[in-house]
Image (tube, rainbow, N blue to C red; front, side, top):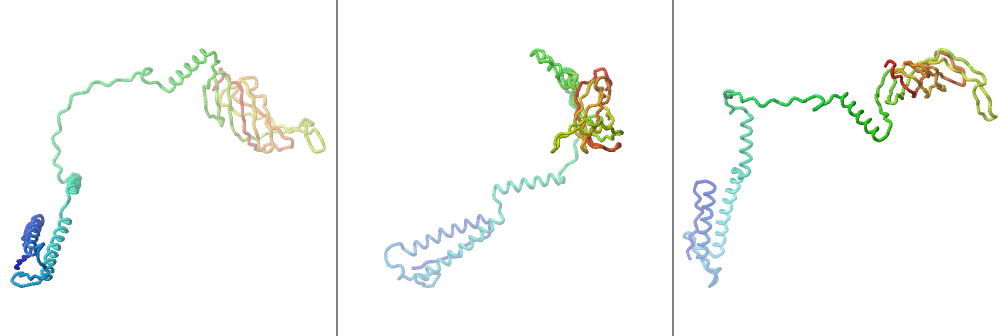
Length: 291
């Protein structure tokens, strides 16, 4: 039986056209094989075949077919690899085009000259001017309104109004004042007593052998300026070097801008010694005094 195998006739053209030629060749090869090697009747392995003028056995024919198919497969793989490396998928092409357009715009090479300035548009309507006391308030006005509303609420509820009117730090004091004319302030200072006197038997000491009276050593009255005029003052606090603090006469009765206190100790001390005091003062301030 004569079988004429032809090599794939792949002419020049695009990769798509070459793939179409390979597909056509495979269809022709299958038809030739179906004709040359019947699917039934007789022993195909015992027959001989003529291939391009030469007589070959069944197994030689089978080898030639495999070689033909391998050549076709190699050519198909080359074309597929080339198409994958040199051609771009649709979605990747869109991304590359967008990136190219962005680079072109940013380069400025395609920017043309600026066009003429357009005509001025019509003026818009006049804006609204906010009104002080209606649309906005100063900080002082807000505080005054808050105090007034609070007092009205307290009056309606039968509560005596006593609100904080001022908070500040002046001359080392941190203070707070209330509308009821009271105040409270704290401060830490370094003071130097100028005199020391002893009062014999004025302090009771409790020891292992019983109680006994000893002497108390008191400093002169030390005064410190206050942030505002006060009418009364109760001074308490702590002091360094085993000193105690007691109120002095300043600020107890008359309006003044200072408070007074005395340092006490059970042991004698030298005057002109620097002492650190931490004071807490409460009392009433003078509404008519100077700030």
